[in-house]
Length: 84
Image (cartoon, rainbow, N blue to C red):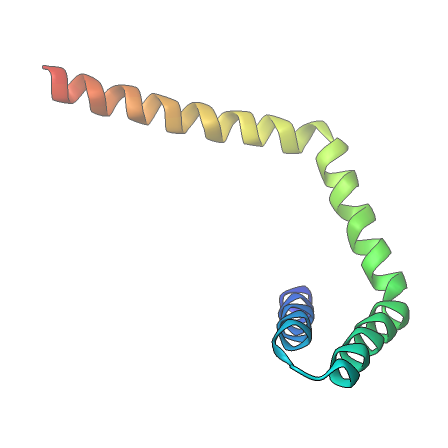
């Protein structure tokens, strides 16, 4: 939940930077974004590291493969039901 809120805040700051007309406010928005990234750099790096560890583990790819196979089998059965 916290990561979703953090992503929303960053997106809102980026929208603010792009929409505001004054150069001073754009620079201030970039400085605030940089400060937020600097303050939460440890949390950001640990989250990225946990994502890479999850992807590198075989469990992630196995569950992804099973999920894709179940979707494929469902589509094949659906088209088979349409054909007959």
